[in-house]
Amino acid sequence: MLSIGTIAPDFELLDQNGEARRLADYRGRRVILYFYPKDMTSGCTKQACAFGALYPQFREKGAVVLGVSKDSVASHKRFEEKYGLPFPLLSDPELKVIQAYDVWKEKMNYGKLTMGVVRTTYLIGENGIIVKAFDKVNATDNPAQMLAELG
Image 1: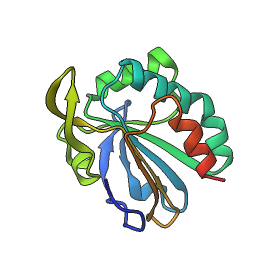
Image 2: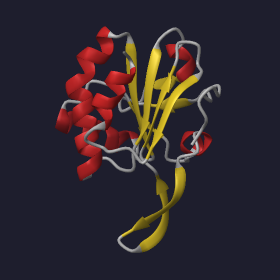
Image 3: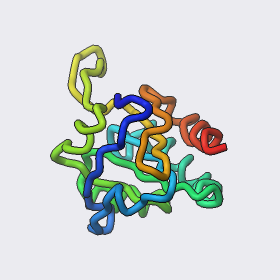
């Protein structure tokens, strides 16, 4: 996990519509950048839907929500459509951004050690600096926690 006070690594990834999104495009706004393991899974669905439900409040506070996983653009599109998600889901199948943000780690999965995305959420300030960083977050509680962090 990257440290608070670190400049958030810039990136360019495709969203669920195939549109390129860069972190630099959001300079001047606070960004909730959350990394999750897989579309359509129980925890990831709970987290995404909770971010979706609170999305108007994030916007009122001038914040942007961006979700990142290694799933494909097509998978993200199905996820967005099935659950009506109102924010960009970014596809990182080559793990470039996932590794740059240090969220690709060894995990215990059904008693077996594997590599995967550790559910992590960053709050990036208007100036591109990481203000808050949370790893191993609770999928259900994380969106409300991040809304509270915005003050």
